[in-house]
Amino acid sequence: MPENEDMSAVAPVDLDGPVILDEEQWRPRAEAHASRVDAWTAGRLERAARGRRHPVDDFLFEYYPTRAGQLRRWHPGLGVAVSGATELAQDPAYRVVSDGVVTVDPAHFARRRDGLAWIEGLVRRTSERAPRLGCFGLHEWAMVYGLEQEGVRHESWPLRLAPQEIRDVVDEQGVHCTHYDAFRFFTPEAVPLNEVAPTRATQPDLDQPGCLHATMDLYKWTSKYAALVGSDLVADTFGLAREARGLDMEAAPYDLHALGYEPIRLETPEGRAEYVRRQRALIERAAPLRRRVAGALLAGLTAVDASA
Image (cartoon, one colour):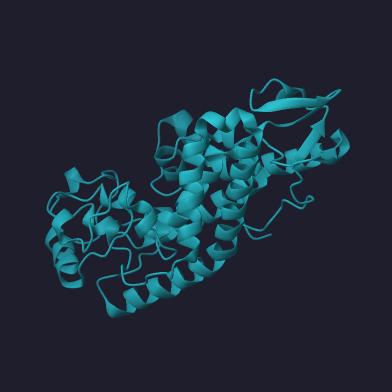
């Protein structure tokens, strides 16, 4: 099964009466979710126990605040109630609707309503925007622009080009990064080279579907509201984010051969063409998922407003 295939085959949200799943129905889904997540997190947990890090697989746990155990926990999502889930009954994000039956409580999210609205608008507007394909993934290059090996973020992994060669590629191609959370890690020398100066405030105006970081952020947004959108959707976004991060680091100027990653040589026309081909494929995979996320966030926002 593709990593971002829709596993949430339940009835649509009904704010007047949730679909009720008994334990025989929801428990296998929860176990399937846990197994799916375990396959992704086993390496992370083993490395953490040994004090080791992986620049690709660990990124989503270091850059985003959701821990492996939190990702593993299953939430049915808005419009679904479950019976016999004592672990959810203790969660303040849930309410009891009848004997032993609990469902997510939209009122719990009232204090986070403005943040939810901001994220919903961001994802929706991004999904409606045409992708840009001219960045060639050079944001990682801009993060090491002008630095020697000992000064780079992933200092344990060697740069595959000399610092001057990296500088030459960036100077020749230019930097066209639209994502604030990538731009803010640019070196001081690289900042003025970018064609725009993204800020958090301008993120809804600049995020676009061609950006790998905007695609990875779908996981960030769903994990923040996992109880509302459901863990199946969170896992789908995590699976796609892993793919995006893999492409991100294959296009980076690091030598990751020891980890099994072949570089996309952006310093060559062939490498840039390969990056765009891979970028287009990721955009196509992300498009339906981005629409699902936008719809789930809107449903959550609607439910929160209705609970006020």
